[in-house]
Length: 624
Ligand code: ADP
Ligand code: ZN
Image (cartoon, rainbow, N blue to C red; front, side):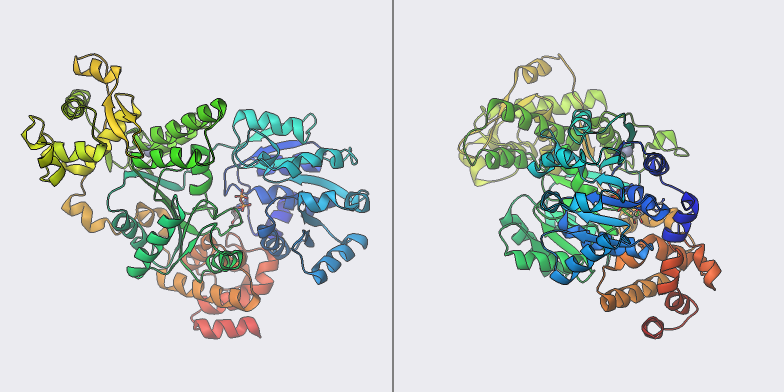
C-alpha cells in the first residue's frame, strides 16, 4: 500500500491533515469501523478518498446527493483516483463505462445512491474487491435527524452481505441522540468515534435586528465584490421581492425556490457553482447540492427554523477555510410566520408542537442574547467553547458582532430601567397592540393610529426617543425571549401582553439582559467597507491584482473543461500563489492544494500567468 503522507501530498498537494482525518484514514486502513462527525468544510471526503488512493481496494460511497456526485467524481479524478458514480440520472454512456471499470477491476472509488444500490446485485459484483464502505450524510438514516430518508434504512441488509468490509459513517451535524442512532442503524461494529468540534472559527457571525433589510444586505454584499454569496429568505414571495430589489441595486443575482420549474432551478444552481452568478436568493431548498467552496457570505433575511438548520445553511460559507461572514437579520415577526407556516396543513401533534417550540426558542436565544455567537452555537451542540489560542481573552472569539463590540450588553441597572419602561408602555396600551405600535409610542412617533388611540397623551409617549426604533424593537424581542412579555396571536396580528415575570420585574423582582446594536461612529464608518476578514492575515503579502488574474484564468479553464472553478484550485490555493509567486514547478508544488496531478494539468498556465503573461496567453498555454 502507498504511504498515507505521500498519497496526501501527491494526490491533494497537502502536507498535513485536518483534525481527525488521519484517525479516520487509519481506522479504514486497519479495518475498523468509525463514526466521523466533522463540521462542513472539515474535509470529510478526504477521509474515504485517501484510503482509495492508498490502495485499500474499492471504496464505495453511499450518498443521497446525486447532484453532487459528478463534481465529487471530477475532483477525485483530479487527485489521481479512478472514480465513477452510479445513480438514476446518469447518461447511458457513463453508466456503461462505470460498469466496465467495475467489471475489469480498475475502479477505486464508486459513488452510489441508496436507491441504485438496492437495485440489481451491485454488491455481489464488487464484494471481492470492496475495501471500504462509506455512508455519507449518515444523519439521513435517523428518524431523529433533521433530514430522514427511508431509503437509508435498506442499507443495513445490503452491508451485512459483506460483513468483513470496514464501514465509515460521516455527517456534519448530529446531536448525541442522532449519533447513537447512526451507530445502531448502519450498523457500526466496535466502532471508534471521531467527533470534531462543531465550531467554525473562520466564520464571522452577526445577528442583527432587521431594519431596512435591503440596505443591510447591500452593505454586506458590497464588502465582497465579485464573490459568491447566498441570501436565504422564508417564503417564495420574499425571494422574488429581494431578488428584484438587489437586481435594482446592480447586484448580479438569481432567485431559487421550490415553485420554480426544475429546469430553471438547475440552471441557477449551475450558474452559481460555475461563478456566472454571484448571489443566489433562495428558500432553504437551495444548497443541498452545492459544494462551492468559496462562498464568502450567507445572509439569512429571516429566522431559520432551528439552530441545526442555521448551522447547516450558514455552514455553506467558507468551506475553503478562508474567512466568511454569516449574518442573521431577524425580527420576532418571523417566529409568528414560522408558526403559521407549520400549521398550514392542520394542527400539530403535541410532540411536534413541543419540538417546534424548542427549536424556535433556540433560534431566538441565539439571535437575541448578547453573548458570543460562537459560544452559543457550540454549546447548542453539547460542546464547550474555548477562545482560540492567541486571542486576547477580553476580545473573545474576535469573530462575532458581540465580541467585536458591534453589539453590546447594557449594564444590569440600565437593562432593568429600559425593560420597565417598555413593560409599562405595553401596560398603558392595555395588551391590545403589537410590537410595532408599542415601539412607535416609546419613540414618540406621530402616527394616525397613535392619535386615534390618544396614545400621544400617555406618560410613556416618547420615553425612549433617544434610543431609536431599532433598539426599542430589538429590546421588545429580547423581553419576549426572556418571558417578560408574551405574544397573543390575534388573527395573524400578534399582540403584546405582560407575563407574570414581567409584572414581577416592574416591582423590582428578577433580572434581565439586554443587548444593543452600536451605531457605527464616524471613524468606524469609514472602515465599514472592509469586513474584518479583509484585515486578517489571510491577505498578508497577497498581490491582489495577480489574485484577480488567477481567478480569471481559473474561470476560463473551468468554462473550457466544463467543471466548477473551485475544483481546479481553491481560493486558498490561488491566494497562496499570489503571495508566494512560485517561479517553477518545484515552487508550485509547495503551494497548498497543488499535487502532482493538478500540476501536470494546470501548472504551466498558472506559472505563466504568475510570471507576467496575460490571462489570455496563459489560457492559450493551457489549451495547447
Ligand atoms: P466537507 O465535506 O467536510 O464539508 P470537503 O471534503 O468538501 O469538506 O473539504 C472542504 C475543503 O477543505 C476542500 O476544499 C478540501 O480540498 C479542503 N481540505 C480537505 N482536507 C484538507 C487538508 N488536509 N488540508 C487542507 N485542505 C483540506
Ligand atoms: Zn464571539
